[in-house]
Image 1 (cartoon, helix red, strand yellow):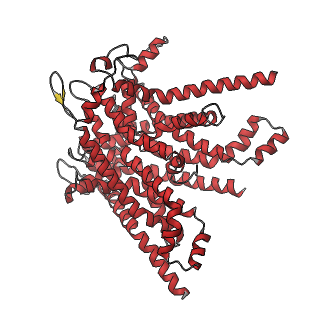
Image 2 (tube, rainbow over the protein chains, first blue to last red; image 1 turned 90 degrees about the horizontal axis):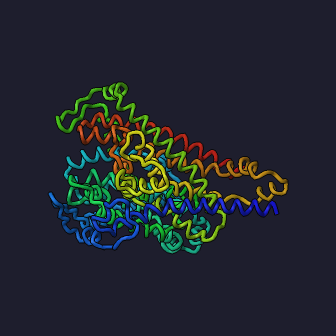
Image 3 (cartoon, rainbow over the protein chains, first blue to last red; image 1 turned 180 degrees about the vertical axis):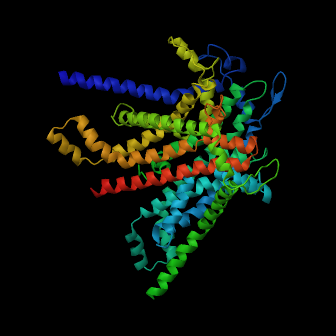
Length: 288
Length: 296
């Protein structure tokens, strides 16, 4: 009897704790969604409105890149272009990283050669280095050699984020495949390429997908590289969000709508590869 | 025959490896550039770039703004890491109890970690607005005074720590959760047979077994907080009155607002040295903990 009471009170406290945790997680997302469908008048009203007539005008302004007419100035953020820029740069950066990183990861996982661990640790140290120490010199160098503000320049710069990740994660996926499988295939007379294609590739295919998607998310979420190395024409979406603060006022509703549109790809992709999140976020150190 | 194959396979290894190696060297070039230029008075406006030895570093030691940003960086790191590890642990515990709808809660819980940090900062900035923000409204509704949040020099640092925690509590939480789920069953059964208290099992069994996972969370969070830029820049731009001016943000201002690149590089080299030494130490600790857990 006494014991039962104790168990149910623990359960009650735990349930309350979980509810608080979920409110803390969900409320900011709910609130920004809320703001994004309010009219300019509702969004700055006080007290804040929980119930109102919803409008999709903010989204149409943001998604169609329409001009917003203020009293003293006109603000146009050209959001669709920034969104497209992000897509181009992220696809290019991830493509290059996978093309170069997957073979390197295979080589690290399967062969022994001098300096291999040094190389792996140099890559890992990029993950922990302050971004500006690479971006500032790139800003100077890119301007000198004339690729400042170009897509391919940014794709190269983004390698600092996507390449170490691709190599480290893929190395773990290759190491998960037992050597015996490869030995057996070799005895069956397969060439190196045959083994890689017929034995390894089918087994790491989910790993390759997870790695590509996660590096895409990291590249998408990146702010500093795009902020410093892009021109007005090639600006990615994360730095462009700052553009909703004008001299006249902060465009709360449009900013909220733009924030929602920006976070959507990351969130949707993350739900798809939930299984690999722990492993991905720790560079393969914790296998979730 | 054997010799020929090993020669061939070594060639393959290097061939596969070469493109990534070249890119890595390509990334090391700007690193080297930063270090070299930190010994010059390189300035974008005046166009000078003369060698001045350790002049920038001497200037750092006498620069109160540098010491302030070092202090802010450390305070931010300590605050955010304590918050994230603490709440992350509690969250892992709550999400492992098997309460109703656990799967949905787990998915919902990890969403913020995938948000673009700048977007998270903007979301919270909208809610923390002193006049029409929803936080102050809710606080006043339950009888508390509102706060200036990001706008007050005494509350700004705490506010950006809160935003960082919103994004990275799930990071700590889901890694702890993975660690808890991978715990071996046998020692716990033995402890139950021996009738040891829960607290004792937690202290003497769970914590040591989770040590590798805890160290990984510390490694990633401490490093990310030390070099932190985007949430703070998007939320406060380092203000008000340098209250959230971390080393990275300070270096950004020295480079782009005052075009004093050499001095900015000196900031970054110092920051990088701190990060490098600490990460080297933590990775070593982690490897030791892994071999203890799996060896013992």
